[in-house]
Length: 274
Image (cartoon, rainbow, N blue to C red):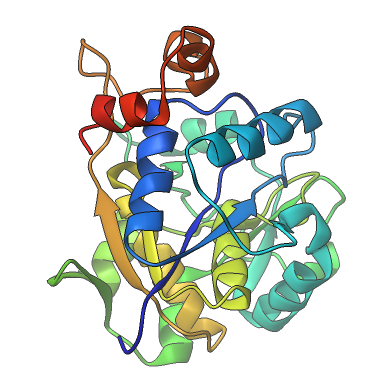
């Protein structure tokens, strides 16, 4: 990768930033030219006060970024164009979680197959066409047809010099037909992040190890949409004393709380091992 990498931090304004977010943002800034993106497609959970707190906390940590800040809520036309391009490889799906669980449990016993987005979709609606789509349907990628269209039998990416390859069958069995447009959103995390990374010219994606299994989905979409494929660095997660990954509901470890208690940006860096 020639020149200095272009990195990004892309939080959702659904709560306060915690130590894990601080680590992820600082890692991105340490590895390239830092960009910020607000991932606010979930309009039911996103709040302007959380976005304001995100911007304030990041600035307090000493981070700067190009203006204006990209917001996913401003980019629905770009997502619609991407969905239209993928339309021959997608289908509407009316199944809810309970339907999927029932379909998977009927013929078998034991643990149900799960992937990055939860239970592996069994393909119940795969026969449906877009003319049959209802207002409450999601849009799924027909992954088998996507691999056929690309003429690929495997897909992968490099993370810190290590190749991570999935065969077509491993992808079908372990990930399945992912959702590209969710009810009430007009897109999904997977589609939006791929379109936005390309739009911002991101050349190095730094993010937590918890998103590692989603990266094969993103690489597949990059191939299908003829988008550049950035390099990836999946960093360690910041955990609590019980070993659990920090979550936004854990306000005791919110950056805002540490600031209130008198912590400095240097203290935060020390807490996350930088």
